[in-house]
Image (cartoon, rainbow, N blue to C red):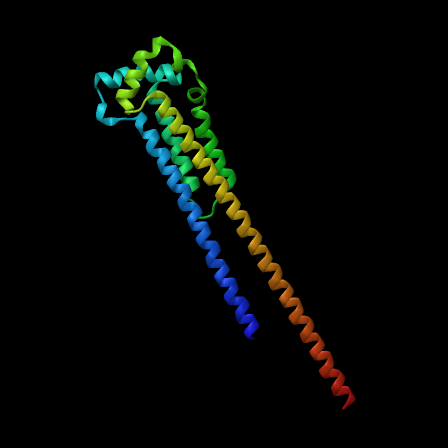
Length: 202
């Protein structure tokens, strides 16, 4: 009896530990997501609506992203919401989370890979308007965006790893429970056989 209680308490302690790891991985994932979301919000500065800086930024944005800002940010925030819904689920789903992340990442590929804003004199105005609007240089914005994207991807991978470990642990526990039941059943059969055998002798 004591052994069973000890096993049960070990199991509960392990489960609590697994739950803590799960909670920590989820929180870390959401922190990475919030940083990315906060960074992307720099592309939609409501305080500058109707100003000359905003109209200059719109032209700069179209040059950098190959799309008008309203269309791009509208799609971007929809993609961000989808990603948040996936990451905030209690029951983590790696495929759904990674798919939502890839959609958002793909949206920024042209901007991330473009070299045109690095050395062309023509983009001096583009750079200036981008800086005035977002408070960041173009390259700084791009590098920080890449860092946040990588951080979110890494945290999704971490959660997937923890989920795999948890599922493996659950399977082991279930196998152990099944084995224990089989052993108990065998012991009961042996005990019954012995009792019946003794009854026959008597």
